[in-house]
Length: 138
Length: 148
Image (cartoon, chains in turn purple, orange):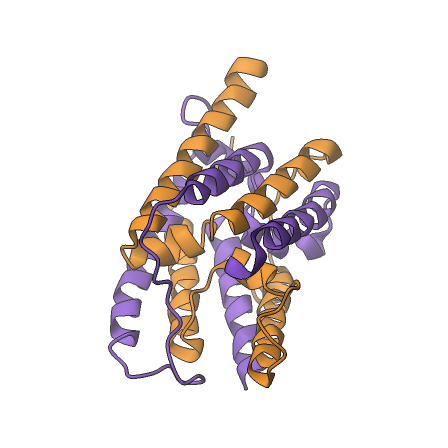
């Protein structure tokens, strides 16, 4: 059951990335190009997603428990440490160079553009390196 | 140049948000792609059946992401429009940075930028502010300082 639900949620998420244009690195890079060929579309992607999630989370978290597991697993940390600044800085640098973040890159994988085939294995290697370096805390 | 697509982007964004809400409803978890993808890799939390089933669920979610463009073309009849840089070295470096940075910073555009902001998480506001600022600065330097 859980496997089918997750497959469906991945499809829905990926469908949203494609419909929104976020799966296209050219659109992402133009969003980030404030002083050039600026394309504000991605602000609408984020706005649409955050508004739906803001309302939806409040409805869902009013429940005692999720449907398929005994309890909610929510992040509890509130501290701002160096890792929370260094990680997003490195991420933002890579995002600005390639125009891909993890979701769009995975959605692009099957379309097999040469740049994607360079990006995704390197991304997986980077994720693994961070996990090994950080131990089980991430 | 890319075309400004406010309606399609708002609709696509709403579908992303809906997926995140349904993930919370079904599994009680944040739909953060870097967390889901990176936790497919070892080390695993433990050898329990719960952990094995969680890994299987994550694998199914990633399979759904990968299959999405084919579903999109089957449903709409339209090809997925994409322009990816063919600079192999640049894309490999970008991939390393995105993979490492998203795990090191506990999230990416989905976990921090969508779910975290929607939960009004202080950490996610900081992380999103940093990666957006560095993303803007990176494209500025690449296109208008080096490329200009």
